[in-house]
Length: 160
Image (cartoon, rainbow, N blue to C red; front, side):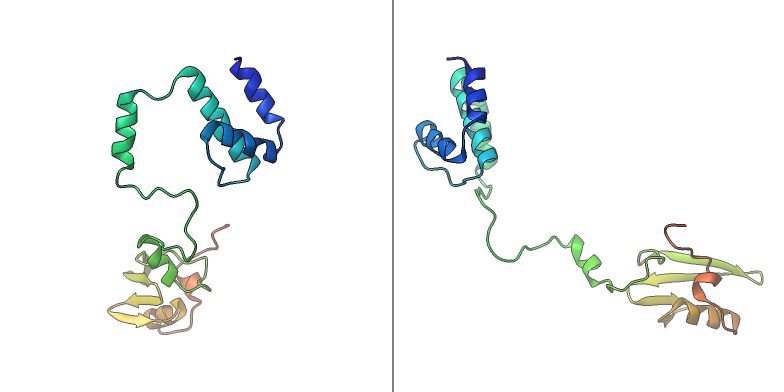
């Protein structure tokens, strides 16, 4: 048996022919009709039979690793539960200005010899213990006159 020739012949088979070959090698129907998946699985099995399967030690280790694993052939139907790391990003407003740094960042500006610090929040800004809805409102609180908040804190667009 020349394994290279047999695998080359597999590559020319249709999905229906590969499904029949899968039954011959595995003794059961394939759960997928995907031609590429069938080709890879059958080629792997043919190589394993030709060259020898996993050693007993490797097989035991694989069983140890898989013992508690949720072994699925297909993903479950229904909603996907995302890790907690995604929760903070999900709470950010969709229309958030891309020029703003992420929440928790501190914007610093020196104005008339005094240094001012403003913390970016998920839904606004904090300056001097007070909450503000916009950087313009913060700039007004600092200067007492109207300033564009992005200009006051020298925030440029991300592409600049």
